[in-house]
Image (cartoon, rainbow, N blue to C red; front, side, top):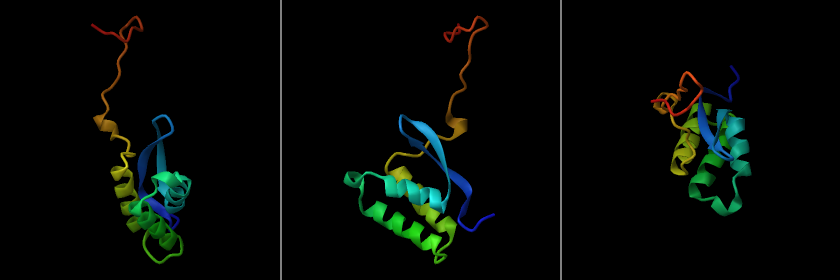
Length: 99
């Protein structure tokens, strides 16, 4: 495994609510660089610097992952856990309004 890879991806919601898996420090860094300037705050600065430090090998990738995950949670970007999503069922006729 590459040194910048996360043990477990951080799944965030992007665009119109589509899930995206952030699997590495470079993925997190790219997301942060693309973050709108008007929404940047102290938390953004901290996690961006942590990603830069992890890319230079100064801190562990998992440390950057933890900070990125906290940033995503603060900004309500974390996707819900798959087990928390109710399964969708169709009726035998394809009707989503099962009775």
